[in-house]
Length: 188
Image (cartoon, rainbow, N blue to C red):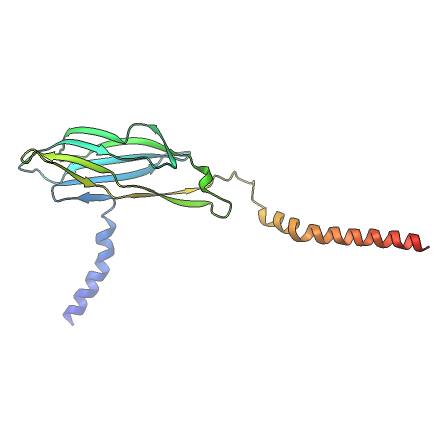
């Protein structure tokens, strides 16, 4: 009975444990993150971060951020490449702006798409070993929607109905009546 209660408690606690994980990745002594923030007009601020989890008996030196901008986006400002000389317990960030620019990715049937910003690679070196190591951030997903101006396609269903069903039916009725009248005039 005690084991089933413990299992139930663990099952209820798992979503809360993983909910706070976010985009953080750590290897035991450093923590890295990659986040995307919507600014305005299809523009996103991408922020890469690194910090020491706690004071270490060694220093983390020569930090290189290497990230890439997907082909659907354009780099507006900043750079996805950055250098820091030394990691600290407080967060150090590199930020850059990208803008969504691939409108051909959409259709009227598919007005929303999810894009993946691939994980960034952060290289570093421990002062004790002198060997370059790396850690990858987690990928970030962005959902983009086709920019349809307000009111343009508001009544699209009605227009489709009128164009495909109502207009041909009314046209056929009109033609039949006119042809019938012309035939009656000829016969008289």
